Image 1 (cartoon, helix red, strand yellow):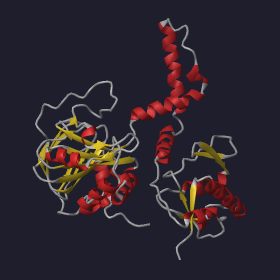
Image 2: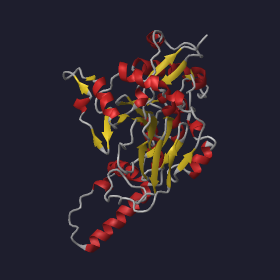
Image 3: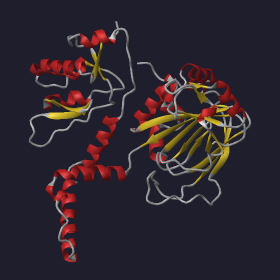
Length: 400
């Protein structure tokens, strides 16, 4: 597996990953100055030109903003419905007039950005999305705002002036019941983000960026760790399997009856929390992240159809980052969800299947080593062959 040109540990240097996660992640703003050119290989201007020329993105992936207002896409995208094309003349004219170009999900079309995004997801245990921002004049793309996710900014080329303000609501949500009021205090940080510099803004920190009448290129990663509100929504839904959660609320006019009901529900929820519902929720979130698409032509279709017969053959999850293995008390089989359905496996295979990853392949001999009863190895082979046929896993022959 090739290493990314730049990985997560490099972008936060000289901080260690442990220090960043303990002291800054979801808590504190961070600015780091770095040597010029250290982020340029992630996406040089030439690569951006190639993307725009050969992979003209559809709406809403490519957007132009000026002073908080999105430009009419008909000014830079034209053609018949179903065959829209980028209008290069209109695009350059708008950029020359001060518009900021935003290319959403740039990790989908830029390999080095995809590698760094995967490294960030692995380090932060959450989904990350990379958006590119390019500006030339002095007009800002957006007004002062906060984002409902964690933000990492890498200045790839040129400079940009930033203002960062403290949050005005603790842990605000995108669909919050109350709006965060705009900041009234001075910025907690104001400065020039130079080529090679890094910013981290936790969710809720207000900010605004200004181009400096020169070409400026930066990428902003949005990292979305799950919130307590999301866990509670999921947990309450899972509790519906119990009759206590489905009981009718009829005959609750009496205050004493309502108080008794709340006491019963409190005991019920406390009992349900004796397991590890939060661990289950986090495991499901990790398993739900999509693995980076990997196509190994011309050999992949041949390898996929071969029966698994070599200990050195490597196994990789095709779509998911990991599998969340469930086993209900008293049930003879374990199960996991993939490709829209549940798959059932012997409990002796749980350790092997938990080793499977979409980020890197695992040698079959390492999977087989997790099984104490070697007479079951043949059944593990059959199970993996079935999953390969269904497109759940890839079989990759070891390189000679």
